[in-house]
Image (cartoon, rainbow, N blue to C red; front, side, top):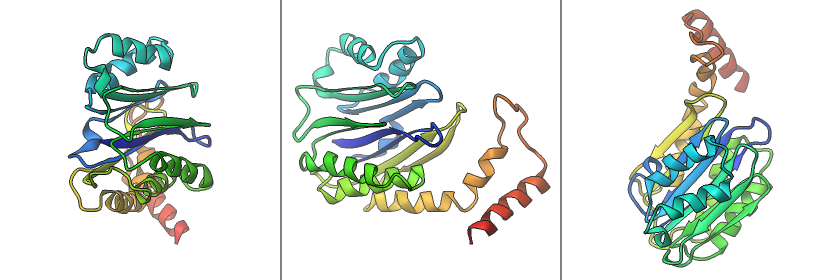
Length: 236
């Protein structure tokens, strides 16, 4: 009922997942990322524990392939699941259960993995991949959204569209960007609009939040405001 892309930005090392579907609030269940650990997208008849337990297994040092095998072994319904996994080393594994609805499948490329089910056809994944590869110079968030737009243009979810999400993690446990469109006539278009708005202030502000290296962050509002305004002015 969904297709998604997991990728790691070569320039920053950030993990990102973009996803779209004809189902409510896809961002609440499909994407799972842990900084320095990896990323998992769990979909089809979604099992949220594939994301929750899968990240625990990655933390323990299990390979993406072993993570999927362990998740399947604990789930009698795994034939109805789809999942793909990328670890901190860029290794990828994916599984599409035998009972997933056509068209369904997955593919991987250098630094990314794409999987989907109940799609208009294989071209949804192929065009998503081709557009991601072709737009290496785009900022990471925009590159992921552009790739998803291409998949939608190829037919996307064959039932239609309803929700979309974009999740990106950097070095911290909190997300660098977490955008969700839960119910919308044009979810990817709305996701693109929200990403544009995030660049007005949020992407400049987030550097001042507490980090593990700097637990207090920056609290001087004069410094924060001056830096944000200077960054905005530099983009005009």
